[in-house]
Image 1: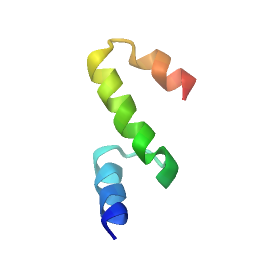
Image 2: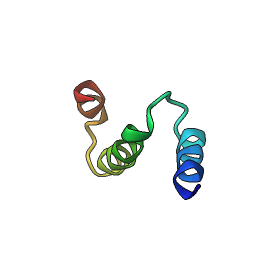
Image 3: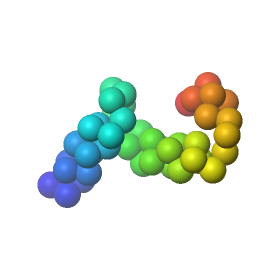
Image 4: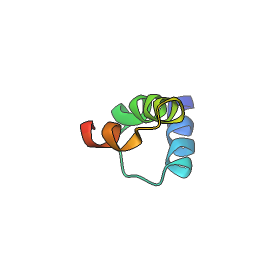
Length: 46
């Protein structure tokens, strides 16, 4: 149940249809985007 709640929170924060597996990737991508000014490169790779 905790995982489902976490997924819902991520969906609300990031309005992008992504599977549960990408949930962790989205968090890492968000952190990387905050640190790296090249968010487009990350989005292209994903």
